[in-house]
Length: 206
Image (cartoon, rainbow, N blue to C red):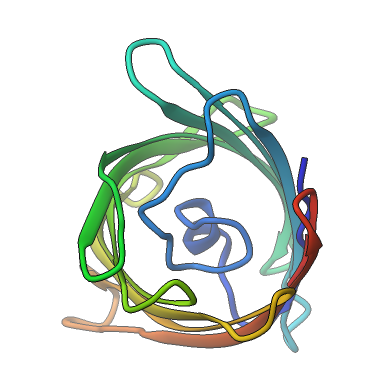
């Protein structure tokens, strides 16, 4: 079991629902069959928006290895509190390796935990190119359907991971979504960076 925590600014709940933990850009890898973990993180902004997330996941093998997760989000936005659940299934299509591009696929949705209303649906293809045993580039491209306003978005992201010591990894990433908006043609990229401390195989902190 692993745990991760982070403090992030300006990271919306809908963006988090399609993400891999506190970071927004996912890698193509999945864990070993039978392994489980719990990730949790906090997000806050100067306008009092707030999000607290727990994301348990396990890898099973019904016909091929599949990582099943459930993102549980307690959030405050525009003066209102919400509780959402976002199940997700991810499977690796081509394994990663040094000098080789690997990719996977995941899909899921989000629901209002109180009303059962279906809020979003999403599908993403993460790709990872390993530059070395300690450095990798991650690329994400996908689709998001915001059912509350019946709008569709292209989601994208690029990230760089560098494990510069045995216990520390640095991540830098840019991500966003494009599509229908109140402002025609709007594109709202975001940027974040952080360090992951992993002293052993069962615990990490971002």
